[in-house]
Length: 248
Image 1 (cartoon, rainbow, N blue to C red):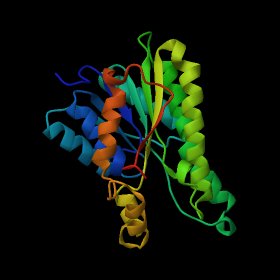
Image 2: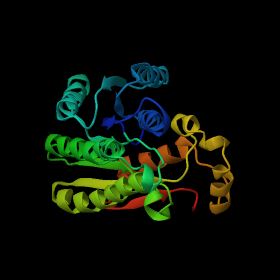
Image 3: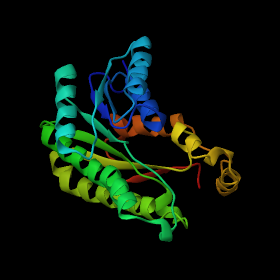
């Protein structure tokens, strides 16, 4: 038996990158997984196929986390497939660097709608659906909220918000046996980061020099922390922001 046998997890933004790896890691420990996607159904179904090939259970479920009706449908799909949801990983997010002079209302709202409002809507739905046994919410923040990098003001603001939401909801929901924690990754080699050209830029070497463990992160580095937070190994941990960044 795995650490999560009998549990059901919903991972938002799980068609690729960190979310996909978290979904597969939770499934490898016995959880049934709802693999959410916003646009890449093909990517989500690939994750589901890989979980099934390894002997696990998963379903793909589309939906924009910033839309209430989509969030409701997402939880309904999870309940239909597996009966309940015990663990929620708020991984869905967007990222684009821009200096102050390039900040627009459109970019601001896009970041805050997905990274903050979406997290709140999913967390609210999860808290309403968790039974008397409680539940587990894991947010994916960023060490951006500690690094305060120039030219990254809007994204950084959203991740400050995630840190604060994590601490507030841990207090607000703790009496219902709902734990809330955040994983704050450093630079991780994902498809999205590669598409931005970051992995081929001088920025990578700068990050490596600032990282005591001397490398860029891998999605599995984050997924292992998610398994810990999702399992009873962390039953006395809530309201924490865990930097999974190689010491950056």
